[in-house]
Amino acid sequence: MLQIEAQRKTTELTFIETESYLDKLLVEEVANSDDLKSILGMLLFDDTLSSQLKRQVERQLKQLKGCN
Image (tube, rainbow, N blue to C red; front, side):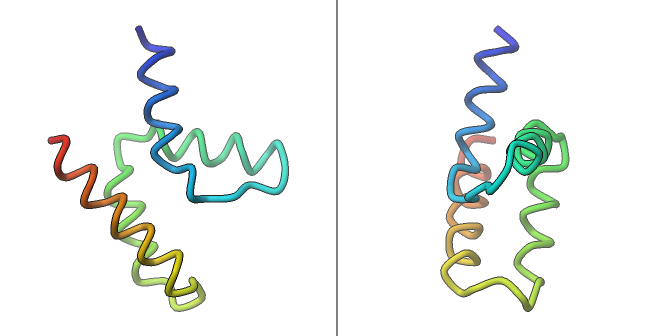
């Protein structure tokens, strides 16, 4: 059951492209975090992110809010 939940959460962040195994581990850790909404919210304030990535983050936040 926990493994299925972890897989579901990890797929929520598939818009983040990882370049290494360590990047993948970090994304999985963030996806499984209880603070996922806060982390994604903070990304919206990052001026270095592209508009496209910010739109993807916004979509993800809307999906998460719809689940709760």
